[in-house]
Image 1 (cartoon, chains in turn orange, brown):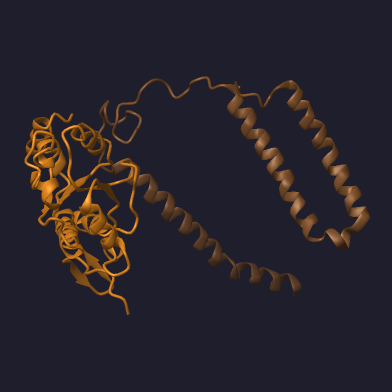
Image 2: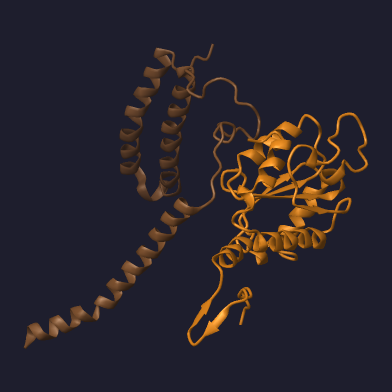
Length: 178
Length: 126
């Protein structure tokens, strides 16, 4: 039998179980991520391997990639982001559906990597808030999967009120996102 | 006696009806509540038309030259005509003379139309 996912901690009785709505919603969200692959270089090639049969991101419920930000809830930035690409990335992030998460895959997306030059953004966290960084140049599919699992943990434990909080609003304002 | 049998059969199908109602009801309620209580964020930038993150330039409702439409629609027309030639070509010998005459009757009006569009200059691009 295929084990789908573990049930959250709950108070169980005969024929019923009680738990917090947040946990159930978190569980559903974590296991039905619609990623938007923003692949600009070699990390994108590693992502293709991640989506392939051997590593198969579909096992984590992220089978369906979305190339429109309107339906996506996980922005996967994979590759070198030049300074000219920065505003484009930001616009894509803004237009994503709520709630949304960001994963920076590889050295370039995380910190600019080897491209310590005038034309390359020194990490995407200069323009958008990032939830998980995946190290590597490029990271192997296992590392990308590890990043996805970390994102799933974040989604599972995120409180409903997080995105309404002053702290979060301040974070967005610091990036100039209304 | 007979009506009783019919009635009991109809009641047997009630379970299926209930299942349909539950299935449709589940879908509609989840869609409704996902829309109602799901988190939302509204801003001017978010509702801009999506052009892969780039600023959109101009209006999408631009007048295009009618030439594009004419060439496209005429291509479709004659493309479909050619498709009808294939089964005729495959069965050319079996269909024989009568098939040839029928195909001629099919092509003739289209050929007439072809000369008409040439005369009208519909395919002249410059």
